[in-house]
Length: 99
Image (cartoon, rainbow, N blue to C red; front, side, top):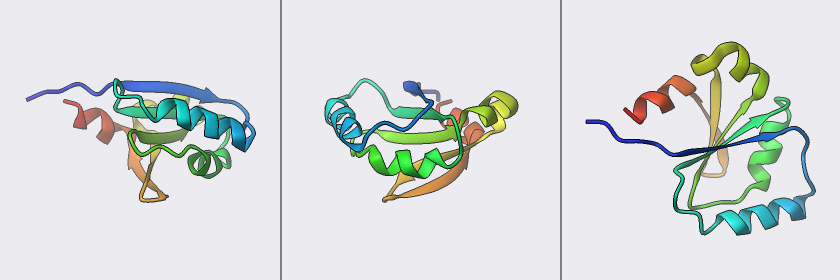
């Protein structure tokens, strides 16, 4: 049995000010048309910082380094923000979960 997964993708080249992420989180807190908000980050050191700044309870947040995504495709590592920590998962597992 198959079901779809609606994913929004954002490329984060540089970190914004913390109050800007509070605004973004507030705007997205009522979002109900997407299942996963996926951030492609410019560098690995951005991942934990960005994960901590985006505070959403209604969406699953996924993060990866853009360069990894380009070179490894569906084999790249993704970090899901759950229970206030990053959990690594292969992107292929996310893709397969939607089938």
